[in-house]
Length: 265
Image (cartoon, rainbow, N blue to C red; front, side, top):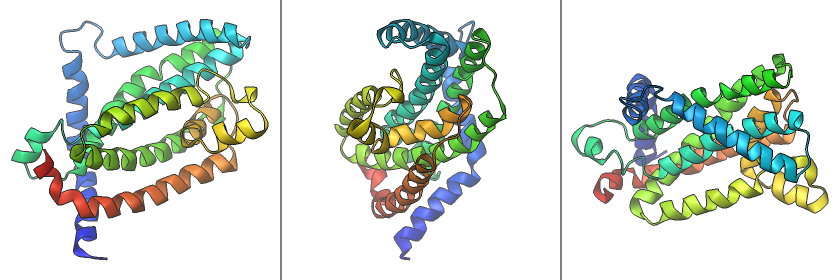
């Protein structure tokens, strides 16, 4: 292992040791966004609740799916998708938006990515409140299987961490790429089972839109336990593989270009 690789790994480890600082900065970002607002971050919950209700009425009617099945599926999927898509989008500008801090303070670079992830975990925690309310509305039990969503969320977040870090490095160098990433995520939203159910697919379409779709596996390892079913072995293996291979690849790229990030800002 060369000195650049050691430097990249030390940067990530140093950032992990400063997790409290990343948490403070991420929480300040959320508070800053809703300063002087009466409801504060709970505006996020209200907005998400209205969106879920509107999409549920429209697409539940179009696909003729019983609301008792569709609304919990839609609510869980769209809340998780919002977390995933926002981390990736904001990961693209993680270094650009922190350029003043990067140029003045010798903090680990990965700390700025952790700040993005923590900020969105706080927002996710506000939105998650909607799920038990919907279960209560339809008198659906939330059993112990839901606890399996916790390791699923940890694994999904590990994958998002390297995606955000890689996107941050590449988009700092090539600023136009953040727009391309946003467009790709918009397409991914429609081809991932969030506003439609996987049971609508069969044969080759199931293989293409489910098995080959990384977003489906990242969402399913969290969503399936909440809905009372265990994720498949394929969901776990693909998610684990993405986390391991992605981190190795990202550390190689990060080791090579980390020193140049401050010059690109």
